[in-house]
Image (cartoon, rainbow, N blue to C red; front, side, top):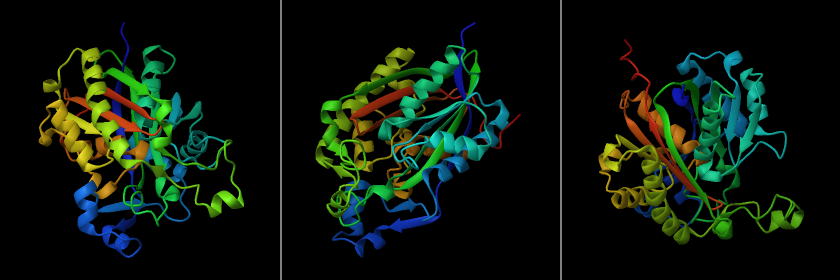
Length: 334
């Protein structure tokens, strides 16, 4: 019997705090018009002072388990996609496992904004191989903790949040194909210089503001709009379907201009490209499951819909997954 990995539950959590464009106008030399024109972003969720990445992840995980109707003791594996862990170790996955009352193995995957797709590959492989039947996959990040709010080129882009899915073994449907890629030679396009073994934290690194995100925005843009159509087509080919078969393209929510350009190069109408970037900003590994949960709870997903989940980020990394949606739309249960 062929085993597939279907998504049976989705959930998300956004902190209540917000940084609006009007707030940023008072902090750096920028304007609402400048930000919206270049990014499409109007506000960013921001974690409270006492909230860590695991706190957001726990809330999203609880929501996904509730939608799936899965008890904590029935989860075989927890995979956490994040590049903003609570601490160097233990893993944020283990901290989240404790908060959710799970007893299964748990670990982190760090592929930055592509983290959810990389973790989806890992979760799918565990299920298809028979080594797990039920996997909880969470993407969570608190990127605003690593944003330099004196740098107008990066502080406008990022927000905090968490999204989660529950995957279960099935005989059909679910994840149809996944294509991944990485190019470490271009890691310097998007990185945080200090805080790791190469440049441990010191008074000097703090004074030089080297614990904040640094990005070559123009190069990241050119990279994303080239590689995402290529990897999406690769995942479609692997799945035996065409771009015209897609009900939805669900990209990583980085920048509306990137989303628009990707859609045009793939030949997907803008009505079939999901975007919530205006109100979430770039939540890194959380953005794709957050978008998926938005679509599900709004009632716009139907069983049998083909979805392309696509991401790109620091590393540089990229990935795409084609998923056949199998869950009934909320409010339309039989």
